[in-house]
Each structure stands twice: as C-alpha cells, then as structure tokens.
Length: 196
Image 1 (cartoon, rainbow, N blue to C red):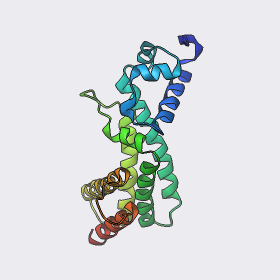
Image 2 (cartoon, rainbow, N blue to C red; image 1 turned 45 degrees about the horizontal axis):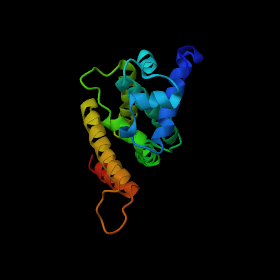
Image 3 (spheres, helix red, strand yellow; image 1 turned 90 degrees about the vertical axis):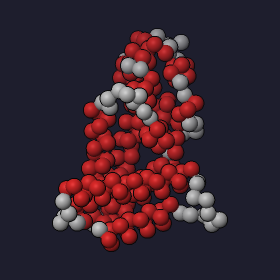
C-alpha cells in the first residue's frame, strides 16, 4: 500500500483521474466506490478524501476531465468547419460520436448528482463554455434573433441532440431497421433551422 508521500498531491490527483477514466472505458461508474478506487491506485480511502474532499467531488473531477476532452474535440470540429451552419452540425455530430466512443464516461457526466451541494464554479465554467459554443454558432447563423431567442433555441437543439444521442448510446430506437443517430440529428437541425 502506497503512503501519502509516495506521490505529490498533483500526481495523486492525476493518477486517480487516469485510473478512473481507464476503468470507465470498460465498466459503468456504478461499479465504482471510494474503496475500490483507493485499492486500484494503492492508497487508503481516507487519502482520497483528504485530496478530493469526498467521493462525490472525486467523481465530479472525472466529469470535468471528460468535459475538457469533449470540449477540445468540439473546438476542433467547429474550427475545421467552413461556415457557422456546418460548424453547428459538426458540433452535434461530435457530441454524438464522443458519447458512442465513451458511453460510460458520458453516462457519468449526465447522471452525476451534487446531492444538494452547490456546483463548484470551476465546473459551472466548463458547462458555460460548452453551451456558449452552441449559442455563438446560432447567433452567427441568425444574428437577427434576440439573446433570449438564441438561448431558447440552443436549449431546444441541445435537448434534441442529447435525446438522440442517449437513444443511440443505449440502442433504444425500437425500430425494425437500424437507425443512424447522425441521420436523426441532421433531420432535427435541418428542420429546426429552416423554421427558425
């Protein structure tokens, strides 16, 4: 069993996050516990509590790491687009593809609960960055809309893309023929933008 001084605090945080991230590539977060994570990295649970505050905050750091990766991929997808409308579609496809590639991590992002505690500002900033990217694209596509209209449209589109993505990840379309989530996203965005 490793002792507290075997790693610096920063190394222990990185080791923990890397270990949990790797675990989630094959398993659900429901199979995790503070004790299990501590055993995987060779420390006692109290050390992780000292470093992260509690198990819930440890998982929130894993969520933050996942959002950082999604944000980086989304930024590349948007920057490589030829215009704001293409960027909007590519952002949605990126979201969908990331979830399919990392279903257990994506599930943790949306099922994690603060259990009544306030969301730390460092996590709120990550969420604002992701939603802000969508809002900026909508504003670039239709600059005549008000800020309130753009905000509402962004939440409608994100909800739709999220729902399609959720059904894709869980393979719950309940159709006799296979359904491509990206086709549904394309349909949703095309029709919404035409009428918006």
